[in-house]
Length: 587
Image (cartoon, rainbow, N blue to C red; front, top):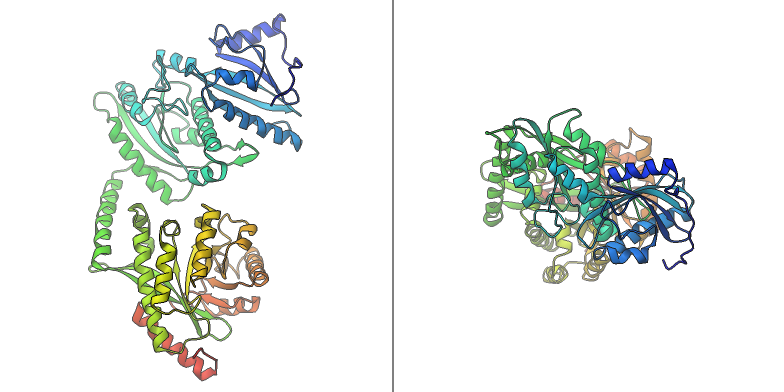
């Protein structure tokens, strides 16, 4: 941004009466007025910088002259925002785009640059000394970090200037010492890891810092504001109207424009009502209750909110008991592979199976995966689960290959979770299993979801290509519900697409579903891929799918997931049907 220092004044000069009043108001608010001229690459500042302690800020400055005043990395953060403005200008969007950036100065203070693009190549706004605001709030009994603010202090989160988790606890104790009714809300930013991967850490940090400033704007008075974790914020304040969770949602869930991207943040929130005074809860207990409520909110989907209630305690104990039993189940052999048939829609004959995990509890019977997969994930045992299902499936497949003349292209598919895709030696283990059991090419099919693959498309592509070279088939599950681009679909080594059940189940009810199914079938045909429709619940739906050109179907209309011996009986009956129909099978 090395542009010449030509000066074009776009802010009013201070001698004018109206300007004097403006600067007096800005000074009272702890702010300077600024303009940024893209064509010149320069800022113009107006206001009483000396009274604000911002004397290094001169009337006219470029990014290069600002950089020495900023903490390490902050000039690059500001440059990211300005480049975004550059992009917006180049495509000549309407002049109402937010310009926002939270910056740390060399002296460890926080300043907040905020404004709007008001014309092509021109943005106007204010620069506010947040450290001054925090000290003022503290001196008036507020809960935000106050006098002696030091961004190196472990009590202060250096990115946002809010309390850190360690600073939150004493701040809560101080505020709750006063009698009254309070509300405490913890909010968790949904899909932050995806945001980090898409934008990079610097831009994701910018999003977090802007969200923190929005919290300050929404709770300017006596409130404890904290960043408890990477993507988790908290507010404790006196009860009022509107409710704290509603104020937080209104403040935080507004579009953020970062480097040409529009980010639409959503939060899962857990709320706790608490009384202040001598019997007030301590901060640790408040956190425990709120985070229990956050988990309930997450289970309701993105954007959920839940209030702490006593019955959550029993739910929490139940979850702990479930996790303890689940650990034992992995050791004692209670986790099994069951198999759901995949049928040729033209002939009705078996084409393959999908292996699905089932927990066969000695007292409670069969526990479906929806009831234990999340616990398995939380325990970090997804790779253990995958190993159990993979080994059982390969043994079953090897046995059937030796015992029966199976249809040409017969396969059993196994789901690969994201931790398994990232696991070292996955390719070597799969290759060994295929060799040891003498499996034909693509007889073992590995299913991955769009969302798991898109966590790191380049790395996933390498792993999937190596698995294909080892002799495995590769299927893309839940197609149409994730975030992948068609360019990646063409590059990745898939041989099968699976149409998500959400489109299949509404096929006869929603015109859009039929259009989506037709589009996927056309795409599969053009790319030379097999297509499997999931969620085929009856023969009428199977017939409709076949009429659209779908070759394979899977769902309750054929059979539910079957334990190994029942799946073998289904296989034998289907092979007998194939013989009776004269359908050619592999010798």
